[in-house]
Image 1 (spheres, one colour):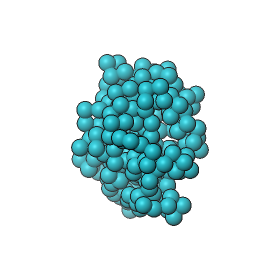
Image 2 (cartoon, helix red, strand yellow):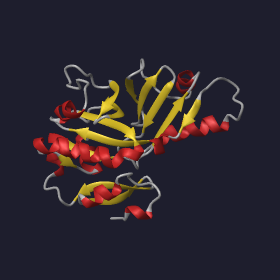
Image 3 (cartoon, helix red, strand yellow):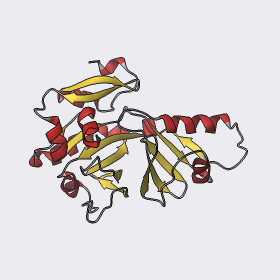
Length: 236
């Protein structure tokens, strides 16, 4: 058990998590909420409707003319078209937001190896680049990252998002660039094992607001906060 204030990388909403009973541990050099003392059965909550704050985990971004070609030539499995995701061999998830824009999420074990390697390769190529290859974006700081999972997760979003995210209308791997709780956000369906799940990314400055909105919307379904361990268990 660690104190989030001892780490530079911690949730943007760490005070909210701490007040909810979060227990923090070091994951990939950051303080991450791994479980909650207030939860009676986090695994069951995650299957019903669990909300995890994953912002301390690694993520990277790349954008600009030539980005997708360069990333593909350097080992990225490129999503087939904008607004789709592609799973990577190392467990990362690539979100293609536009023709030449990729948002890369590390896996739930805290690995961000592929994103770090691609960023290092880009920097090692020198400036100006020998070929058109876009540029990295600081996604670690720009967006807060939450994972909403469970059988009621699509119903939760129906309360705060105008896009129909039900599985019969929104495929696994699909992305919606939309408004959630009246805020611009990205929602990417990425089922964890057999459990319906959605990654939610929004402005990091509004992490506390979004956390409160999600918990409020989840209350009627018996949902609530869960730690990283419960989310990892879904994918096991």
